[in-house]
Amino acid sequence: MDKRTFLKNSGLLGLGLLGAATAPWLTSCAPANGAELPHNWMWFHAHMERTDEEWESILLTLKSAGITGILIGGGRPMLSRIIPMADKHGMDVHAWMWTLNRNGDQEALKHPDWYAVSRDGNSCFDVRPYVDYYQWVCPSKEEVYQHILQQVTELCGVPGLKGVHLDYVRYSDVILPEALQPVYNLVQDKEYPEFDFCYCPTCREKFKKAYGIDIQTVEDPTSLLEWRQYRYDSVTKLVNRLSKEVRQRNKLITAAVFPYPELARTICRQSWDEWHLDAVFPMLYQNFYNKPVEWISYATKKGITDTRGKVPLYAGLFLPELSGEDLKIAIDYSLEAGASGVAVFDYGSFSEAHQEAFKTALLERDTGK
Ligand SMILES: [Zn+2]
Image (cartoon, rainbow, N blue to C red):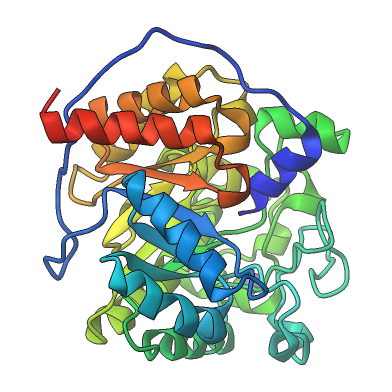
C-alpha cells in the first residue's frame, strides 16, 4: 500500500463534496469457486501488540458497520490469532502480502541478483527509487517466483484462511500519480531511466529470445511496444501461476491494484484485466490523481468494462482523505458504477463519521432503498 504511505507523507487534501446519491447494493459476480464474498472490506497492518480484547472490539465495530472482510498482514502469527476471532463473527480473513516489493525480506537479501535493475544500471538491492522501502525483485526470474510461491503456500496452510491478497504486484512506478510528483520534487513528463525497470540479464535474455531484439541496443526503449508488452506479461504470468496454485488449495486469490488497467499499465506495468483473480481491489484514491470524488465512479466503470464484469470489483477508498459525507458518496458512486462493494484503508483513520456512513449504506441495502 505504498500510495497510502505516500499520501500520508504528502499532506494532500481531498477534493470535492457532491450531492447525495443512493443505489442498490449490487453483487455483480462470484469468485471461481462460487464462494460468497463479503460486501465490504478493510485493510489492516498486523498490530500484534493489540490484545485479543482490543481485536474483539474492533471486529464488533466493523461488523456493526457491515464490514466483514479482513485483509491483514503479518503472516501466520497474526492470521492464527485473528482468524478464530473473525470466524466467530462470520467474518472472512484474507492474507495481505507484499509480492514484488520485498522490503526487509532477509531471504531475498541473500540473493542480490533477484533484484530489479533500472535502465541506468542500478539494482534495487542497493539503490532504491523514491523511498528506501522500495526493494523490488524481478518478476521474470524463476527463483523469485519460487520464493513468492513458497510464501503463498505457507499462507494457504493457515487453518481457516479464506484467501491470499496480493499487493505490490507490479513494477516500481515508472510515472508517479500526478499529485505525488511534487512530493518528490519530480516532473515525470516521460519515463526516466532511474525509474524504468527491469533491465537485468534475465529480462534482456528472455526479451531477446521472445522478440529477437537486444533491448540494450535500442536507442529509446520507452517507445518500443514489444518491450512494454514483455513487462506486462512478466507480471501477468507470475500472478496467473500463483493463481493456479492458490486455487488448487481451494483458497481465493485477490489483488490490490492501481485504479484501472490502462492507467495501471502506464504507471507501473500492471495489466490486471488479464489476471486470473477471484476479486480485484483497485485503489481509487482520487486525490493522488488530483481528481474529484466523481472519478471513483469513472474508474470503477473502466475496471468493470475491462474485466468484462467477470471479476467482483471492490472500490478501494482512502479514509484519511474522505469525510464521512464523502465516504457515503464514494460508496454510492462505487455501487452505482457496478462495484460489488468497497474496501477501506485503514482502521487507524476509521472515524465515527465513517462508521455512520457505512451504517447508512448498510441500512439502505437492507431496506432496498
Ligand atoms: Zn529483470
